[in-house]
Amino acid sequence: MTVESTAAARKPRRASKRTSAAKKPQSAEPQLVQLLTPEGERVEHPDYSIDLSAEELRGLYRDMVLTRRFDAEATALQRQGELGLWASLLGQEAAQIGSGRALRDDDYVFPTYREHGVAWCRGVDPTNLLGMFRGVNHGGWDPNSNNFHLYTIVIGSQTLHATGYAMGVAKDGADSAVIAYFGDGASSQGDVAESFTFSAVYNAPVVFFCQNNQWAISEPTERQTRVPLYQRAQGFGFPGVRVDGNDVLACLAVTRSALERARRGEGPTLVEAFTYRMGAHTTSDDPTKYRADEERAAWEAKDPILRLRTYLEKAGHADEAFFTALEEESETLGKRVREAVRAMPDPEPLALFEHAYADGNSLVDEERAQFAAYQASFADSAEEGK
Image (cartoon, helix red, strand yellow):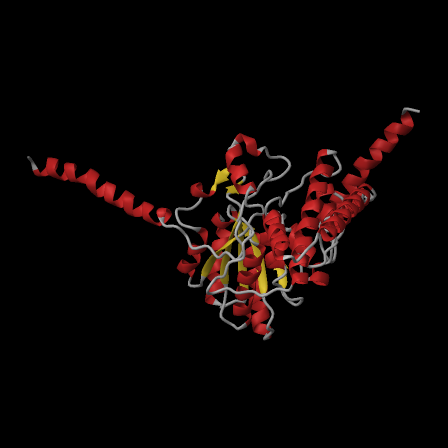
């Protein structure tokens, strides 16, 4: 056997070892913080404990039910042509309500475009979320009134905004914290990596809350990363934790701990809420094209709302009268949202050019005049046709 043939024979074995080594992290079962099982059984965790009253538990359940009802109404309104688009949170209620209720009033939130439950927790009127999706405004609320920033469509950019804001909070000497929401798909964006770097180096008081709903539109998580997402934080020098994203109690406990850590000046934390998007990515998406019905059915058995209801009933923390009253409240909310959307006035067409620059701009003025002339041409045509 020649030296060349011996070396060639060895190559496949070396490649095989590299391949198996690369796959090792994927096969390891990630740790998952859970306080409430899918069967509605209360369990304990050595690092995260929580003690809530029956009233507080009912409040979390109410938050999730009303958020889901609002979300369902918005989806229906889009199907009826009242909204141009909608990004549903169906299945992610526990991740959003749990983390949202962990916040203090002086904390600041930087959302994506799907954090309807967090907006609810921050006191943003649900109807204000719909103006942008109807195309009548650019947001609909004052971010500083609720410490809840406007929805961000550009994937991942809000993590940089949150990091910069958190760096400012630290320099001001405040003890508040910042939280940035993003999805598993956004975790592959360069903006997110840059925000991890800056927040770690400057010890920024920020919590990165990643809702891993398993699908970045049509790409599954395994096509995005070879290790669990929360482990990425280690490479940037700060801790990461994976929490059961369908367990509202665990999401509350883990997020509260991460926020307190940030307030103590110990820097950022990455929280990966392991959950599932039970609906479409947006109303322009058809998930049946890329995922199996069996997968959704398996996750429906882990429904966050059903899980908490089971616990409430078993523990005697809620009776049938509570659930009946909540159902009536949810229907009232749905009706209010319907009526509010249909009553939203269309903006003046030329308002498009307002607030582009604080002191005006000659190019914007020129474009405004051109658009005004274009609009006026329709009126002229209508007059000539009479």
